Amino acid sequence: MNTPRQLVNSIVLPAIEPTSPQWLSKARAHLDVLTKPLGSLGRLEDFAAQMVSIRRQDYAVPLRKAVYVFAADHGITAEGVSAYPSEVTRQMVLNFISHGAAINVLAKLHNVDLNVVDVGVDSEFDGIDGLLHRKVRLGTRNMLHEPAMSSEELTEAFNVGLNLANDVKAQGYSTVAVGEMGIGNTTAASAITSLLTHKPVDLITGRGTGLNSEALKHKRQVIEAVLKKHFGDLRKNTPAKPLDILRTVGGLEIAAMTGFILGAAQRGVAVVVDGFISTAAAAIAFAAVPQVRDYLFAGHQSEEPGHQALLEYLGLKPILALNMRLGEGTGAVLAMPILESAMCLYNQMATFESAGVSEAKD
Image (cartoon, rainbow, N blue to C red; front, side, top):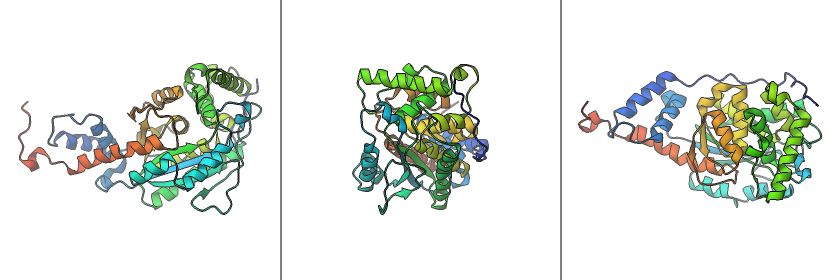
């Protein structure tokens, strides 16, 4: 057994203030006097109350929305775990910059500012505008043979996200979606999911970009070998530390998303996570700083089987279920108008008193 060494004490986890129970109670009380039967707006009322508990006195300010798509490559692709070659990561980043991807269409439609971040694509983008250049290294190492990242690389990638969260607040964004692009990253997310939830690899590992049955079997075998090499029986006995999990079997984009999620929550910004990969980052963030949970919304339910396990681990219910498994932040951006609708209802509906409408009898 090759047990991962302890992470050097180089990552400073942000302190996150819990959301306000007073504002949550105030929001519930306000929702109950709007001109509708009690609870008749269903989960929209839950979304509005959670958002008010996050935003507090700024609850009436219109939402300003952004999506951050973090891109990186994975050394594990050398083991044949993806239906697509690793160069697709670079090609899709260029597609984002050229406004040709699904996330471009949805972000434009829903007035969400799009930011594409190169954290670790195995290619150089020198001289290309429209990209946030934050490369840590040219992809992770092959985690079947060695940890995906060194402690220093993990710290650098984590801090990329943390620093971008500073920009989010400075630019006045109140709600952010978190997406990704990286061939091979469902393999990393599956390894993370198994270690955090203690569920068998076979139950939480899906087809990713579209593997056939034989290739899926091989992918699961590779993940099992990765976990045995780095963690052995540790995952059955003593839970691994979340940042050690991230360093050993994660990705540079997953590390950056983890820092970004924690940094956004620290600054009182609501975070809409996308599918399997970004939820893996949210789960690492939650394992490290549980208070982050109150700032999270699950944009949708991915078709990847591990996503359901992570949502249960986080205690989140997805806003949408559209049988999607694309990534890029698409499901999270699609969910943003639902949150926006919930806040508009909260802020603009009349109360029984203001409208002169009789309330229900006791």
